[in-house]
Length: 190
Ligand code: B4P
Image 1 (cartoon, rainbow, N blue to C red):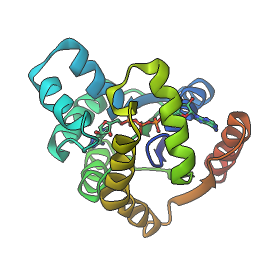
Image 2: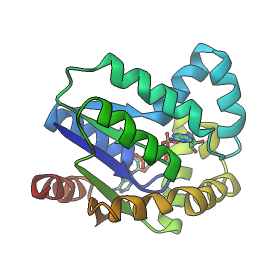
Image 3: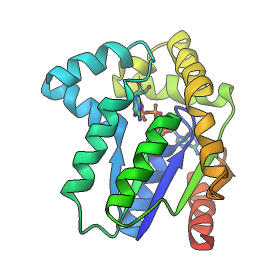
Image 4: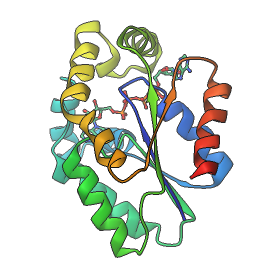
């Protein structure tokens, strides 16, 4: 089973690369950002609560996203593997994921981190904001707050996987196809 964590700050290319990886490795894609946006579209109570936080660039509570991932793992018990996109975003989420996967006698194979500097992230997200309609991509101040939230709460997750010898960093700036090739190389090596 191949279980990949695709890691990086907002706008690093996680969603973009996930699409290519799913097609190539036939993995089930679990994006907590997408799952939360779908709750918002359906107007559920969880979605309404999450929207208030996401619109401010703040992470939603751990127990909410862990619960969503738990449900999805249950739903896809015969999957060939998973790509975790935008999850885990905190150390408690990473610990919870390890426990959940252990229940299915599996574990994270590798974490690939896309490294992109803040100026490039801001530029990409502002461009996406012109067409995506995503409220969290609409202004520079909000994007910088998301990056700050990443630096404070999410960046330590890299150390968590490093201590398990599963952390692989790659340059997230350049041609999408070239970045995809580098990710595949890391997966094959793992
Ligand atoms: P996410 O939906 O995960 O969104 P993201 O980090 O903004 O985007 P992503 O990294 O996937 O975008 P991509 O680079 O592909 O999270 C949104 C919010 O949900 C969070 O702020 C948080 O509030 C909440 N949330 C989600 N998961 C959570 C969790 N686990 N815990 C708590 N809260 C959670 O794309 C960016 C742009 O760059 C695109 O326009 C793309 O075309 C472009 N791009 C990609 N690769 C490029 C390249 N190589 N060169 C140039 N442009 C490129």
